[in-house]
Length: 216
Image (cartoon, rainbow, N blue to C red; front, side):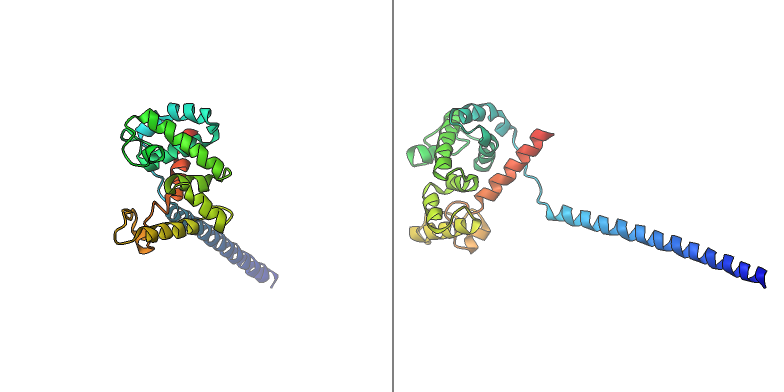
């Protein structure tokens, strides 16, 4: 009887060990599966990093030079990102500064003059925006009137404020005869065709890409 009981106990222990290994294997398998699913979800949620042009990098010394003159050294990468958003570094007016200088496009045909004027204008609106970077960046696209609009309605920049301001300016200009063309399909759906309502998010995406490349 004792031998039979011992044999039964040994067989029971074997089953327990086998079942234990099976549970461990299942646990490890499920953990790996969940981790892979999370990694895949994170990859899908991340927007692709925007590409950066060689022309933009070639302008970096000029940007650093004029940023220093205007006390904007800490905004160097933001300014480079604005160049990417405005022109990708192409053309004779890479910061699209003509309108801030003479009120119309095409009056600047020298890249250095464009960068000097662009940084001077950005430094001014940055001060007007009380160093609210996002507000200053959007005002670079919309004009300084956007800063007054935000100060009257909100405390800081928001994408909702950008959409509302764009819609207001577009409506005031007359939708049918407006000189403003919608740059994005989403903006057209919102009747917000003045400027670029997603200018800040685009510039910040470029800025992030610039900082990542500088780290590598």
